[in-house]
Image (tube, rainbow, N blue to C red; front, side, top):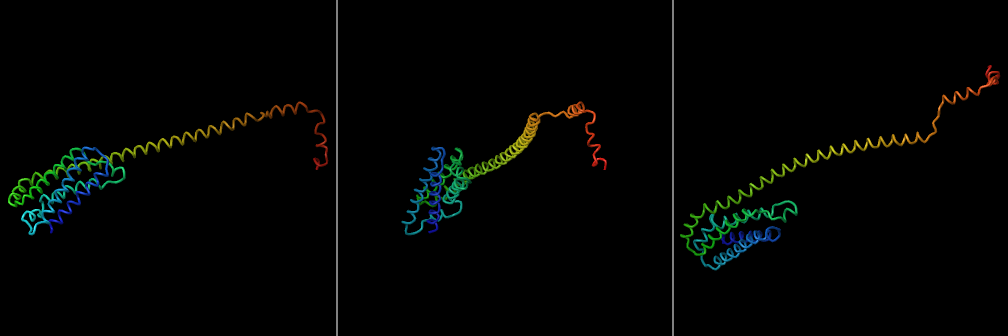
Amino acid sequence: METTASIIVVAQLCERVIEYIVAVFGPKAERQRLWSQTRYCTSLLLKLKDEIDDSDEPKEWTKILQLPYTPLARLGNALSLAAVVLSTRDGLQEKLRWPFKEKDIGKLVEAIKCEMAMVDFALSHNSTSLLIELNTRFKRNGRLLLDFKDALELRVEKTHFTLQDLNSELQIIQTTQNDVRARVEELRGRHDTEEAMQKRQRTLDWLTPVDHALQQRDATSRWQPGTGGWLLCSQMYQD
């Protein structure tokens, strides 16, 4: 019963990965390669489940498949890694973009194929042979998964540094924009001042010039004896 439940969980992981593959855009060959391998994985797991369901008594090899670090467990780990990479991304555009590089797909598909070969081998019902084969392939298959995981972590780290560099460049651009904005405001202020001065000068040029000295000399030249005498002789002035 426990083996059947484990198989169902891994089969559901296959379906999740297939849904993610269909939803994203990317290199057709790489997507098709991962899709085909995952679909084959689902088919083989269902076949394995049927073998268990049709058996009256649990077979020895089904107990072996329940142990930690067996093909079924490692297959679940590989599919979980793929599902996480395909699903945990921010933004719609990022979620629709194919997240794997070609060499990453090669490692992932190879890891799935190796584990599926072991599951297929389990269907031979030979528990002794299965244990020997498990021991032989354990290190190699485990290394494939570790290489795939390390490659993903390295890409995440590089992405982090790239984002830091991009943030620094954006800060420099922002500073430059602020300097340009300040310069524009300064030029605008100078332009407004010059425009005001020109407007004032046009007003002054429009007004008729007044020469007060000339007016004074003109008034003096027209003075005659007795001019203003009436004011000096008036009672108001005398008082």
